[in-house]
Length: 448
Image 1 (cartoon, rainbow, N blue to C red):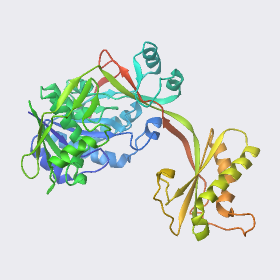
Image 2 (tube, rainbow, N blue to C red):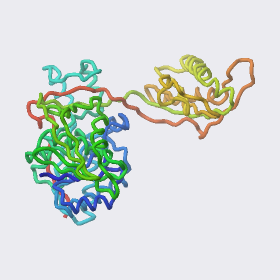
Image 3 (cartoon, helix red, strand yellow):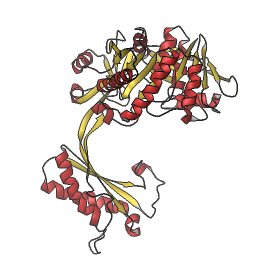
Image 4 (cartoon, rainbow, N blue to C red):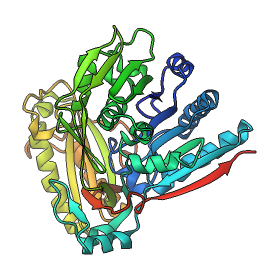
């Protein structure tokens, strides 16, 4: 049996300290926590930075390092620094060094990096080892050159290799959410279907329980399946909460693809052990070609954002016509006065800014915000066009034969430069003969 303690869904989200203490008291074999995802968009991969506060990350990581020392087991984190880029891994390694020095700790750290070499990927592309995932198209080599960072998602094999070094802490770059949980159970011969299924259920901590924000859970893996129990006081796992998690961030509630195959839960049976824990058996692991997903981000321009607040009832009622007219007139003026490509977009905040025209049930209230977004090839051009947009947002009338209105800017100046913006540009898989060939594993010692 392998016991995995998962403090929370991600480092930086926080967790229940009492629940973590209960988990440590149950003597886990490993502590595993996710470090990020693509949920917050391409900026973090594009820049190789974390979305979480350094101080918050350090405070939570210090506590987990102390918990690891108390338990005497490895601490594993995947997708370090939100995006898992090499710079983000180095960022967390530096934090770990600081904590080790401050706590007089000597630690062995396995550092697994997922960053990809562009020339290597071009060679793989030429020999047909890179394939698109729907709905992506065939990969153009120029896209690889445009990427500021490219990572491959490591699986259980790469995490297992890091654990085999005997490291106290494993800091991994981009991994699948499940890999850091499934690695040790698979390495020690637990049921493969149960290992992957339990890892999927545990990837977001207590999300598969009655109190998702409680954070900490414990999963026991064995030769036939797994048992999951939450550590929070009064928190329950039920067959419903556990089985439903296969729907989370997964387009297929039955199959989950991972490097080297896929999980099939068609025959999984969920049984309540008591009023707070669930036993799962019957999940199957189906081996297949060993592929790893590639993620890449490239710079797509520079942006400046402006916000105006509209309270006049007539303008609120006709906000779409007003915005459309501004875009047409300001675009024409800017094209006549500046050189270079740019785009102007007005989003109505508080009406349907999330879904746009797809939101057929949006209703106008007494006030809406209008967010102007100017995207261009340089920050200077983006700012110049945004300043041309300024008088339209402040004074543009609905018609030519009415008095000029005045609206409100919440800030002065209203133009807020966003700097470089990025977009995801890879949705492909890379075929590997050796699971480690696209990854770099190094072992370092830190502390006294």
